[in-house]
Amino acid sequence: MQETNTQTNRLDQIAVLIPCFNEAKTIAKVVRDFREALPEAVIYVYDNNSTDGTAEIAAEAGAVVRYEYQQGKGNVIRRMFREIDAECYLMVDGDDTYPAEYARQMASPVLEKKIDMVVGDRLSSTYFTENKRPFHNFGNTLVRFCINRFFRSDIKDIMTGYRAFSFHFVKTFPVLSKGFEIETEMSIHAIDKNMSTENVVIGYRDRIEGSESKLNTYSDGFKVLRTILRMYKNYRPMQFFGIIALILFLISAGFFIPVLTQYIRTGQVARFPTLIVCGFTMIAAVQSFFAGMILSCIIQKNRQDFESILHRSDERLKHLQRIQSQINQKGGDAE
Image 1 (cartoon, rainbow, N blue to C red):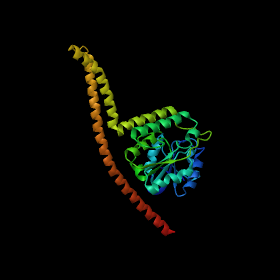
Image 2 (spheres, rainbow, N blue to C red):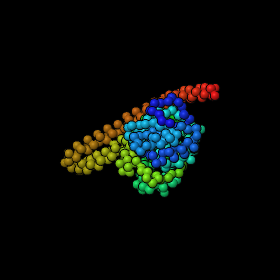
Image 3 (tube, helix red, strand yellow):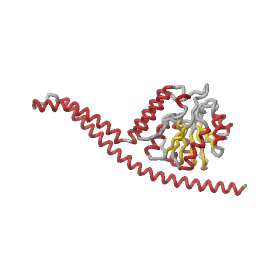
Image 4 (tube, one colour):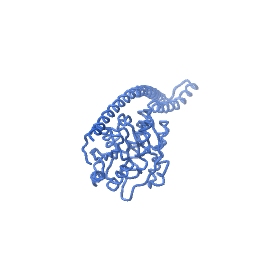
């Protein structure tokens, strides 16, 4: 079932979203498994310039195939979230590392309890024994520690590609990243906007032989850490600039105390260059502190505006539900 990138103006109850780049070895099995686990769901495969026939294989397996020509997982997810309307979105990778048997358990909290993001937690089950790349294990643990420490959260698996989302999350999430750091953005967005989250422990299996990961341990790991730092600055500006202000203050005070001690003892200032540098460093500390205060006020205003955006997305969802109900009713009458 192959389609172009035009939106179909339908509201799916569950949309399974599978971003793919050269997953010909596994995509057919992934599509069949999720069709069996969630018979009522629509399976969307978004092909990202594959050269191994992934799109054709997915279409033969029964998926709705669409395309994103800008390379990068973040670009694919941006396209998915724009084009598809659903009450529940289930995102999974096309490499068959996430078992479909957990799909119902992932989707149910969104549909029944109105949870905004359900996280498939690999790290509490088989990930560390199944994954054969030790630096990936270390990286996942480090990222989880940083996010939960900086943002005071309790998300068990930050980098997992197995997640379920509500309509409100998808339609209010600003996709900024182009690559694999997109999962980190999702987690921080949910935390910052006080969206409801839930962790579901899932099984994990390593890629089959011959299937290669698109994730580069070092370059993508660096991008993820850089994203955490950037988003900490953007979402927690008072803490970020407050730390900088404190460091600058301590440096200034540390160099100023000997100058002051000498002045008290002799009545003379022998180190004018040091005194001047201390003054400029203290000014920079004050500027950092007030920059944090101003940006913190802006962030607070943005959070207030976000509540209005949520209200509008709720109205849109109800409108789509009414339209879908009318379509279903007409279909039943026609039968």
